[in-house]
Image (cartoon, rainbow, N blue to C red):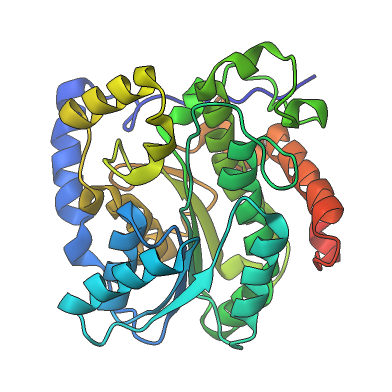
Length: 355
């Protein structure tokens, strides 16, 4: 019987709107950008670090003393972001990594380039993502949002695992945070991810290709499932017990995520209205993933394999069961491994994860 993926609604189950808003305000006083701990000696990587919440996260991590690798597609845009960050923090320790999520071999090369530095990796924010208005294919012929929003991060994370293992063995606390979205709810079928070979091609005749948002919803569902399944599998290693992988919804943020939708008048109108009346600035949007990536509370309570909604609320169930128990997480993992072997054959996958 197929597993069902329907995440529980609401930040604070059982609370009225008034109670929730009161608790949200109280929580925001506890979880904000001024409460990030000292990160001196830590090494971080942020994908999509040149704009939006990725740039804010990079700025904050560097401000708190971390060395930050900015994994970005555009070197000039990354250089502009570095210059802007260094205006307020001249000592910011920043490095550029070429990261093109539409090409899996290029993503693998990004990970290999990082490993050549022989550094630990204490924090990795899998943040880069996008929506496209019309069905498009990645370089490997896969549906673009599945490839860019999920599979590229899967390749990058598995590639840099040696650096994560070193960091965990050294101090027992590594954070992985996948940026997701409440948009996961737009995935139309709670019983399947639709990730067989035919359904990952843009020429599929499947009904759900007729709309962009179901494809986006699938990719955001994958972010949550990957995060919890990764956590479950890494905990099988002795060193993996110090890794805490979580997913975080930033809120509705006015960023460049939707830039590729603007060729459509419908999406342009929708985006304009949402940003005008319902969006939050990037500074606020970065809080949730920075909480997952740095908060002492996450380590002290061993919060791992969860889905965070703003700000720092845990929403971690699939049909009332722990997200890590989802059969869909295992299905996604096995398909991702299969695609990695096909498109990045030189990639080394630990035997314990190749199951």
